[in-house]
Length: 204
Image (cartoon, rainbow, N blue to C red; front, top):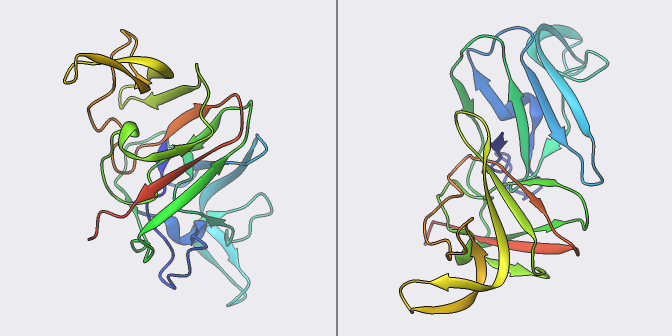
């Protein structure tokens, strides 16, 4: 699961086209699944013959279900699945958002894929959340597969303050203090109510 930490090179905040999002020595048949806000996925495949309408020809690239070069955009702060049968070097393209912060909205009651909207490691307790409810769940994908699971609670134990505070806690009930949301790493969130998260730019 990969997070999209960049905007398009036009810098308008609308995101980057899928055809430009992941570059490198991508093997034919590699798959990208982009989570939809209401659930489900749009699915794309890398092929040597994606139809590029702008030049009326076929080119290597990411194609949609109709075989057309994929121009749909992925916004900063979204995440997607990336799968290939052979190892490859994949590069996330784009530029850092020009805005000082980016707010991402998440629907209630379903698992949504999110990631930092900027290329930076971050502790989920160091960003601004609106609308979190006791028990809301955050699952962070591990490189080897599987997940670390965290819950939002009013009684996370803060070892520094030796007290209980509101925040994201690990399985032992301890306040998360590490930057578990690494640059380019996606995560699942399932909130009871609609929430928003505001990421801050690492560029000061």
